[in-house]
Length: 513
Image 1: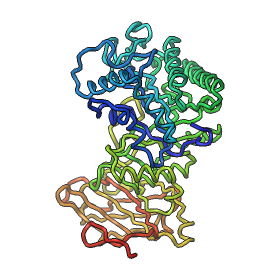
Image 2 (image 1 turned 90 degrees about the horizontal axis):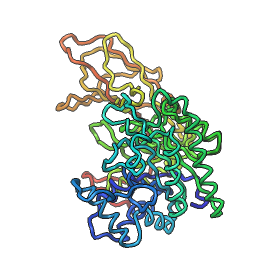
Image 3 (image 1 turned 135 degrees about the vertical axis):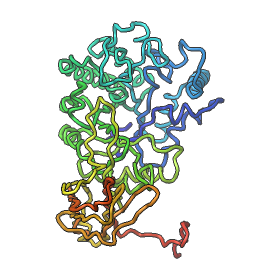
Image 4 (image 1 turned 90 degrees about the vertical axis):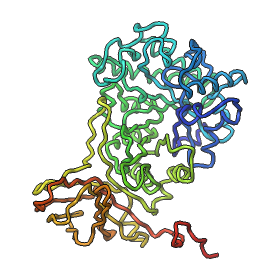
């Protein structure tokens, strides 16, 4: 991609199969292979990170790695058969999926970075096993299990202490940059995050530093030969300590100038628009003159919807902008894209345009996370006990004072959601120190025991930064022995937008001419 287009404001990730190769029935056409570009045209996305295959097996005609279909004749899974047919039929047409996507991206003005999965635990001879492991077996793998990954055969993970492993990955990078003329490369450290034996990880931090430096040296060599700049992007965990536990010293890569962009992947599936524990990544990238992004979840545990809406994504985008991130890295939006998804892909590239548009800041619930990441520290759901005061903080990134000064903000709404709540309890609520009256605030949903308390706040009561909610059951109604559980906290910021008038049914009436 041209230097003038760097850094991208919004990145979208496609793994090349869930929403592409697995959806294509033969006969194949050039038009179908260009689908990942066409569906992003006209949005705010200016860089597509595009997967090279599943596991250690590839969908393009690589001379280095194993191509899907090699050493396999019969396919038991329908969707994998579809991938194989796409690859085989494209080869018969003299092309492949990656080549068509890169070419069409260049024509459409959309940058394409092949995304290289750096690890896979598939055993030797498996459907997703690559040539290096297929031919050399445990000579190039860790050879020992890791109890942080109880459901995987981690002894078959590549050992990055072995030079042969690093050399093969460098060869794959060289191939897509030279033969396919990709705009840049993404190093995906997140597909299966394990690179060294657990007892040896700390000793091999410098080994991984050298590998990333070798990628940088390779991109400079190729870029100089072609009179262009080839950026390197690394996708890692959004928390510093979890990266170091894998041997990934991201700050060292940035300080050395070995990566041009970093993407912090959040392990949670539920969107958190108030996330703050990745800010170190933005700070380190900004200090090094690099770009930084966060990759969020998109789901919700919310009775209103299972997928975050535009007001929630706006809040996330505003949080990133406030913390100094270059932008967001999205992927796996509900597919095929509808108007709702296209609105997200349009607006998330320009957080400044959404500065005075409605947003929902909320606290997501805890999730069951894999044992190889830090336990989820989210506060909700929170069981309230009599006499035990609880404090919950919610961060808002909007410039509240400026909006008040301009007269462009309406009164925000604070909503608390409970799973079971007793109206005969004596309770106390305070928001940023002000007592909130409870009488007449309740709305209940009888089928599932859900209960909402809602207050209209003065805009000046909400601050940019951390807002504090204090709550306590002073006295429980003795006949009500069930738990009172706080499951949701939301601040709905409302601005003086140009709203269309609405009819009495959900269909909007035309605005006056």
